[in-house]
Image 1 (tube, one colour):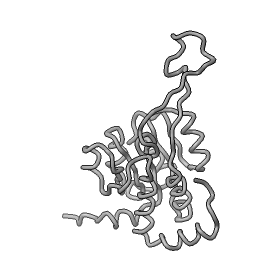
Image 2: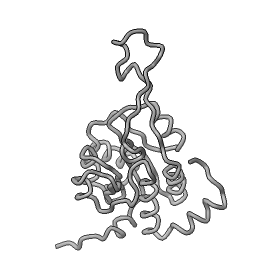
Image 3: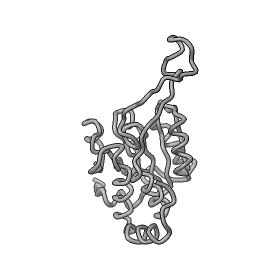
Image 4: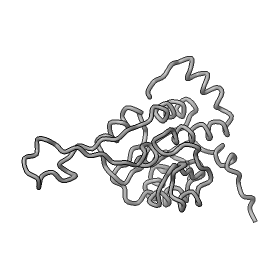
Length: 196
C-alpha cells in the first residue's frame, strides 16, 4: 500500500494555486444595487442591477507573496461578475475562469495549459460545487467557514473564514511548507506592496 502523503509534503509540490471566489475571496454574500437607468420594475431583475463585492487586502497581498514564491495563481468560479474580472486584472491573475459549471474540468484544463500535473495544483474552496476541483488537487484547502462536506475532504482548513484572509492563510501554509516563507517575506518588505 502506498504511503499517504502528509499535508506539508503535498504542499511542497504545489506550483499553481487556484481558488473559488464567492465564499473564498469574499465572505460569500452577494450585493445588488438597482440600476437607476432601468425604467420599469420588470427591467429591475438581477441582470438590471449592479453587483458589488468586498475583497480583503490580506488576500491581495497573498497573491503578491505567491508570485514572489514562484506560485502561479488563478480563479475558477460558477458565477460571472464584472467585479471579479476587475479584481482579477488588479491582482494580475494568470488564469481566470468565470461562468464555470464543471470546476473539475476547468481545474484539469488549467493544469494542462500550465504544463502541470494534478499533484502540483492546489484548490481553495468553500462549498460542494468546489469538490470536483478539490478532489484531484495535490492539496485541497477549505476555508474556515466552509460547508462540513468540504472540510471533510480537505487536506487543510484555513484559520480564517472566506473574505477575511483565508487565501492569505493558504498561501502562507504552502510557502512555509516549501521553506520559502522568510525569503518571500523579506523580498516583499524590501520591494514594497505591489497590490492589495
